[in-house]
Image (tube, rainbow, N blue to C red; front, side):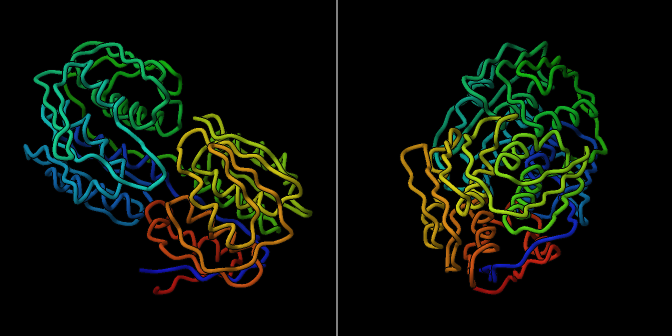
Amino acid sequence: MEKMIIKGGNRLSGRVRVSGAKNAALPALSATLLTDEECIFSGFPPVADIATMGKTLRELGSEVESAGEYIRVKPGNSENFIAPYRLVKTMRASVLVLGPLLAKRGRAKVSLPGGCAIGARPIDMHLDGFQAMGAELKIRHGYVEGQARELRGTRVKFKRSTVTGTENVLMAACLARGETILENAALEPEVTDLANLLIQMGARIEGAGTDKIRINGVDKLSGARYRIIPDRIEAGTLLIAGAMCGGEVQVEGLIFDHQKALVEKLQAAGVKVEHDYDWIRVTRAGKVKAVDFETEPFPGFPTDLQAQMMALLSTAEGTSTIMENIFENRFMHVSELDRMGADIRVEGKRAMVQGVEHLSGAPVMASDLRASASLILAGLSAEGETEVSRIYHLDRGYERLDLKLAQLGADIRRVKD
């Protein structure tokens, strides 16, 4: 295993380009199971989760070739419908093959998903949607087993906002007979990006980006050439790093409309923000001010930036209150920030962050993907040296974040643990 060694105190400055969105790439790869034709993608970050999804597709009979940011997927003639535990256990998004397999092959056996230890993330709303469309499902021995002679269009109303649930049912509905209406659908940009890909493949979809999506099923989908959207969470992480370490950092290749909730909070904290439609520049001269926020589905403040924002606010003037409304265990980074001198108190879904004068470098351990980013950002602004272990979590979702931070002037290096 590897760890990060960070010597804090360097001001960050310069320009850095954001990678493609991992959370858009994963459903895009799953969508290739809906067609018999080749799909070629660009903008894919070479991160561990995408490699895992590639292995899953190969297990299901597809040819998968990657070269840098490009991935080519050619579905094969395999009738295999099993996504095994050894692959799915490390990544929750593997469950996204369930809908395409039911729709295209009529059968699916997919291991119940794993991923970060940030709380229960059940797939009940996925299953409710498939059953409403006529699939027969059961869970046994740790697998979801399903079959569907033919999926039928219907009305599916999600009990709460679910990104992967919306994506999974959306993909299945593309080959269902008749019209499917998804109500209380997720608004996240990754859902809209998936819908745009499916439309390019020949799907008939209206309303993506709203809470009501209409899909009229078609007999088959074609291949596509498609570039995915930039990663709004990586962009946000880099912007917060710039705000923490002073200087002037410009993050390029993003979509400004995807960053509005973060920008609002950075400005409230006293950070100067300038932007155009595809870049944002942050500048901070004085001390950051305390701000309150709560995580919400898009367009609200993303849960995937909560840990990084907490690191920023740990040295702010005053007390900040953070409400985590998405995942019940997403404060696992708090104890490690406290090891670095932060003053954070957690009461249920609420964290009170009393700003301190400075953080101190310390050995810390990442518990999940976004917690690892939070601890690295804390190390950048801390006095002394910080060691972050278990960075395999980081590599699941960020394309060499250490190199991008070093490009901006950070003293950070990756070593064998």
